[in-house]
Length: 91
Image (cartoon, rainbow, N blue to C red; front, side, top):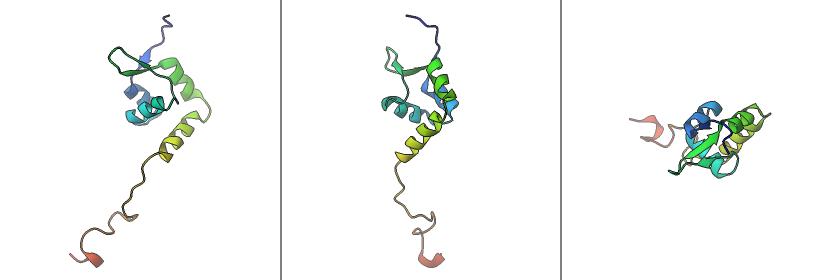
């Protein structure tokens, strides 16, 4: 069944959504975006489905917020310079 729909790589989808390709792969693994696998095991995305998601109201922002919520937190100090080097600014 050939619908003539172009298949996009994770990098192409990432460029459209303005996210990292790994984010697109995580969305696919979580079922947020449909994907198919090539015989070599690579993910591909139907252009029509990607365009439909891009045109959906708030879907992209919701996906980005979900991804941000799952991002690991930095365990370091809140001030990037604090806790490193000599105390009290001594050098």
